[in-house]
Length: 158
Image 1: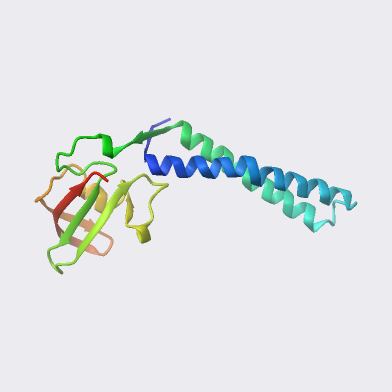
Image 2 (image 1 turned 60 degrees about the vertical axis):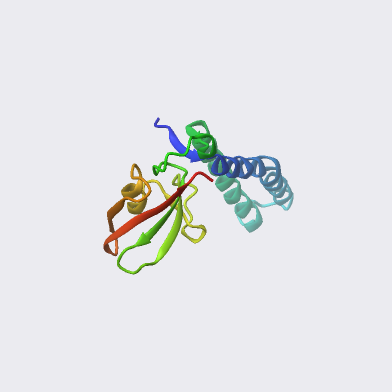
């Protein structure tokens, strides 16, 4: 399976979620199933069926997280020398040359992407257009809203 790039913060968040699922959520659901079993007839026991469904979700999520963590390649951009080049994990400030609007994005893995937190996936059109370019470069990026021209103002290793 391919290695999946991930920031150190992204890996920590997935490990925290996995720990919570294993140490808190899983035991709580197992206890709920045991309690629902004590109520008798399982065919018409809504609590039992809801708990079993929740258990299936938790077990599936645990497997998914373990697979992602076993295949992740953690890239700590703070330990990479600053060259002004856009790479995975860097925080990039760009200026839209048509509107003079300035935006700052961190380029992260797919699981970490959150546009509200200005974190974009390395596979997004904007990130693909920026990766490999340097501060001062002007790039033409094809976005879902059409083509836009951006100047890379700053590349930070935060």
